[in-house]
Length: 267
Image (cartoon, rainbow, N blue to C red; front, top):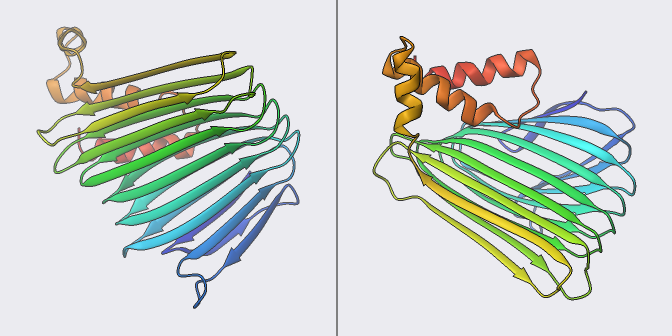
């Protein structure tokens, strides 16, 4: 597996082969933020780990070349982060993105361009929100027969506040496109959370769905687990793990790390 580690917006470790090309542009008078460019040239899996102690900004461009099937696994920890992504997918490419966030505040902007015919993206974001977090994810279906699936799942606790803005665009002539948005927030405090799912479609030959749900776990779920002898805290622990770890394909080591993070709040 290819791996990149970034600390305080600087690449401190990279283990990549010829399937991945990495360029890093440091900030100067022309570029006010560090920029990372990742080209996925062949079928591969890439793991990216972010950790920052101070507030940081970062600009990331990820390009998936024609015919490439790739997976990106991201773990983000630390403090306030402002980050902008741009994804560009070529013909017959397929990108799977799986993110897990445990960070004290973030503003994230993701612009996803399905430029090539038959290009596809499967995007999953999981986060434990303890302070303000805002995510704007926009998918542009620029080619025919393109597909996008966007899942955003967050657990809101302590002083957390979550905002998800998910948007899909299909211009006229991009027939055969498919869009699916699945957004859910488990709100465990009294802070305001919001989900804004948007579909802007100017083409008849399209399949599009979106869902948005904010609330707590169902009482019958907790009751069932407690009736089996689990305490309320342990029942909550299991429900949170199921919610946050579903749809993530993790190594045993990475899964243990994420379980340890969850156990900090429910033990």
